[in-house]
Image (tube, rainbow, N blue to C red; front, side, top):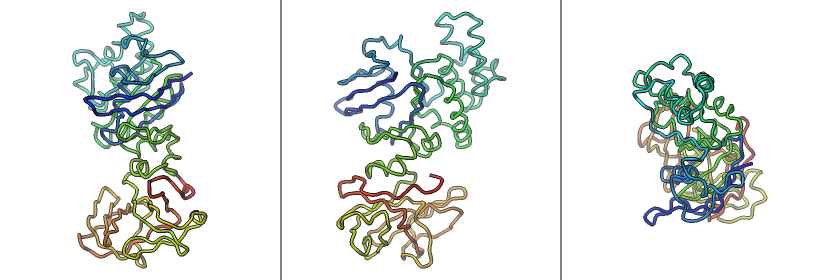
Length: 358
């Protein structure tokens, strides 16, 4: 029992928003769609819910073609980036709204609303109006109203993007429990943040420019990105990518920089490649490669250090605060054991074994 998209395409004013997307979403599972702005994430949700007509392809749910099912009668619930609540209705009535439209018995409405409100942490706020709630609480109301419908398909379009950092962190952790209780529903959650997808540790669909680039478990996509495009999208900061030549002595980079040939690269033939290194695998090292600081971004207890050596540019993701001035000389080291190699056309050629904890 599943939802299947088969070669679906969708264009708007001559611009392809979805380009022959095919995927299979199983009941009772949680999926994260990851991609930058304008990658097609929202267009995919609109196609699934029936808000946008397809140019070609089909979408079926448990074998039934959704094109034959009117939008208003589809078993779908959707949560948007913006809080969409009825300001004149209490939290209780906001959540109960879709159930009242179905004319369900009051006893069942009470039971469902109470249960869902407790699940999302609104149990003590049912009598309040949305205007008296915080942003995070208002988004919980919108989510609860979708959950209470018990739809076959629950779609969430970057629901945390407009919340502050602390609220996002709190709700991300709670979502893991909330969505685990959805039974046979298919849950599809979009985000531009790969770290969010890694936290959920669910099946991931990586999108870019309307195309589906890779599908698989989050950890697998992170440790074995199929292409350089996936490596850039599914890493924050993006993976460092640079031209390299593999020979018997190792990897030769720009400006005469060399990186030892690690064991996982031994079977590759010599020739041109693209070297990929996660920023977390670039370190400050007194015996490393001489480089010049372009920018030091300090975020809390972390530093994103942008350095340059001739044509070679790298970002290092460092723990703790490292205050460095523009133009300051530093020495950096690339962990050869963590090197990815891609073919010149961007296909994965070799990847290191997953690091512990990944």
